[in-house]
Length: 317
Ligand SMILES: Nc1ncnc2c1ncn2[C@@H]1O[C@H](COP(=O)(O)OP(=O)(O)OP(=O)(O)O)[C@@H](O)[C@H]1O
Ligand SMILES: [Mg+2]
Image (tube, rainbow, N blue to C red; front, side, top):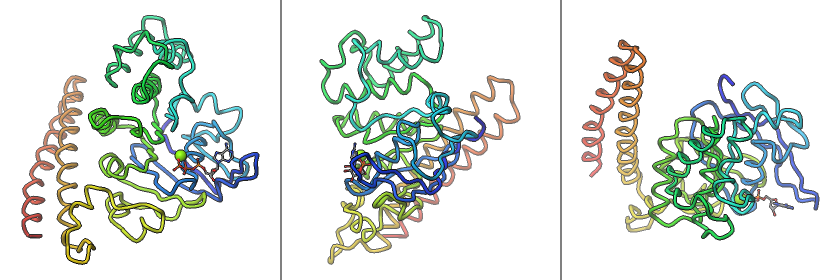
């Protein structure tokens, strides 16, 4: 699949009891984007995500994943590329042991038994769940189930990672580990959550869904600092932004907001620089010396921006 594009065009979906859950949803996500999906309870987020791998199929409208139109015939192929982690991990774990659950995807991809074991161990280690390997999933705690569900999807090495409330059962340390994991997943990721701090940490773009359609779409920092827009959608400012909301009327003034955003941008800046360095190392090991040198230059110049961000923050005081 060349560009891993996810495109929904005027998608409608009604559940068998008559509830209209998607109501003309259109959205285009391109390769490498990190997109947060937010909205009130019942706005259609999970229904939307369940369409990305054909778990549900649109009743009208079209969904394109990469260069394939999603339908009954293509959905098996599309599922190899789009890994969806459901809101409720119980919907995802159905085998006798954790090992079997995580191995299910790689086995279906036709990997050798040795390679399957490696994939399972790598994925479980990534989520800190190696010790759970031989347990029956129904004996796990909620957070452990979530970690295993995430491992089961990571083991398939999807091009597009889709997560529905991935942190809702996780303790703060596991939540932080998940955020770090997601930040280092460089393929396309789509994350629905009411944890707006997580969205702010992980996603550059944020889409607000209301009554089954997109009502706002833009840079995550902009969407998630717009108090009015959030309130219209039963949401609140992320906690990390609320803490800064100490001006007399309770409204965050624009300069305070900018000061926070500069901190956020600076944080992403040094992360990006680290990613460029990692890729420079890879390019070097592949014998692409000129590319490696250029990537290191990009990393250095990115880091140099830190002092500009710092200065701009000081000017906000
Ligand atoms: N299996 C189902 N049968 C009938 N209606 C359903 C079913 N699943 C969801 N719905 C309805 O579809 C609408 C959208 O639900 P959905 O689960 O997509 O919302 P959501 O945005 O994910 O909500 P939440 O924030 O609570 O997870 C709601 O009105 C819901 O009641
Ligand atoms: Mg949901």
